[in-house]
Image (cartoon, rainbow, N blue to C red):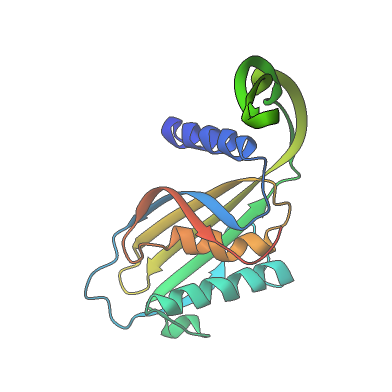
Length: 214
């Protein structure tokens, strides 16, 4: 269950996404809650990725996500290994994305009009000047408009167990809410966000730029 603070951050993130008009996924913001107790002297620094609860290791979606996770771990200095028996960190990976929720919001559009006049002088005949009243344009009000968007919620879970002690040493979760309806373009930025401070944990929103469109 999400904590009150975690849920509040998600609500704030949703409002921000709507205010920005749900722009294309040039960046992905993930609300991260990750805790770590990985020893500083952990050796060997390798990991084996297995499906989290409810995940199917045979599904193409999970396999692609696991490959992304392996790449992120490698970038953090943790070598992925194919055999669980030789891994120090047994890493469980899971994800989900819902069917979306319809959200209706209002936004204001400024209306422009004449807010006054000013007198300007322009050259006239015989070297003289002619005074002329010209309108001054500005905002005279606002027009309220309604937009309807579909907001999708995606979640990534990553947990690690030390194979020697049998203890869980890392537990991370990332939640995204926005206009992206597929997990594939979200995998890299969401996994990267959860492991952004690895081997340390991290809490709070993390924004990562991505070239993958939604």
